[in-house]
Length: 133
Image (cartoon, rainbow, N blue to C red; front, side, top):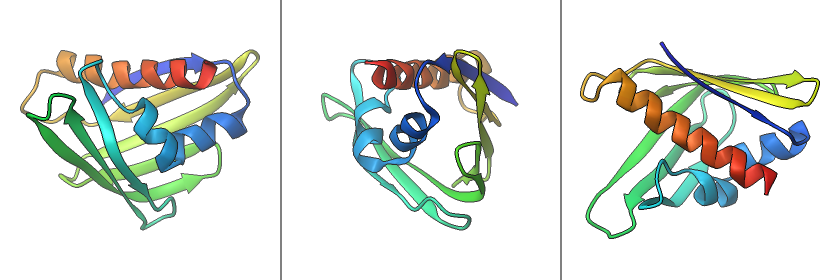
């Protein structure tokens, strides 16, 4: 498993809403300035599915990030399986000065684990900026 994490200074209601609402996901879900998420849908329930279209801003590349939820504890944990079968667990933990978000995910075999860590961490850092600004 690869782990990425960040600390966010905001109420959990705001953090949870911005993490799970498609209209917000499209605003923060990108690993770099030259990528974006022009489309997101999210059926946040066990057995529900999500789909995010991630695309280069120049229009030359895109892919759909698709998964199915396996566990949800309101404002505490989200677990899902990506379409290729890999598991992801997202933990929202209250801290004295805000919330820590930790994501654990099984690596894929195409890109190095370091590259995957950097990409997922960049998306999480983008989320932190979005919530706090």
